[in-house]
Image 1 (cartoon, rainbow, N blue to C red):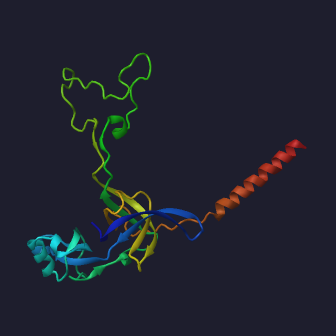
Image 2: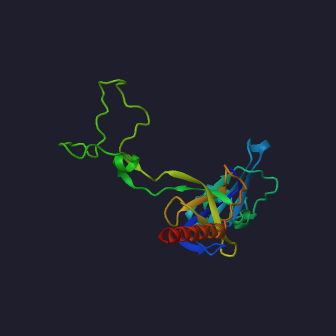
Image 3: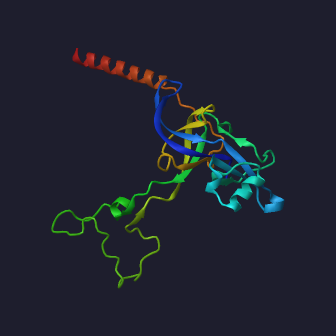
Length: 241
């Protein structure tokens, strides 16, 4: 896993890019995250940095947890996570801020999706449903899955009604539209999983690490449309004459 930050999804808003176009974004309070510990290859068998986010009262943690925080020289935090990264330049007690990202950089966002309770197959899996006419009584039902037919059992992973949502989801390659270092805010364009005030993990894109995708200018498209409209009007006038 690449380096990242813990954050809290605040809600949606809109901003304007460098070309004056409005962008719908999700505001995330990202960090600051305190480095609580380092995992080294020789000692632990892997490399990782352990970070904490959102300070809380000591009364909300047990003695064992408080002892770990005291070893790190920091107060207790509500959330603690690890990132598998090279720890050469990391120090316990340091802070990670939105400065680890750049404007228009692609990131992956992980969170717990909104729970929707027990749902039928049509909503959960997008079934088309049965016949609507001719006396059919199986409009939204799953239908027979046949215990006396081949293969005589239910295939593992078969789509059936059940609990929907409330699962860990990672949405990849979302674009950071703006960074607000003063207020520890990241404005992300795209679908961010989870409900408001819920924990999300923002990390460097796995598939497209370090990619900066700036918004493209639309002036060329506008010019092309004007030329096409002008030619269409000229052809129409010539045909009318």
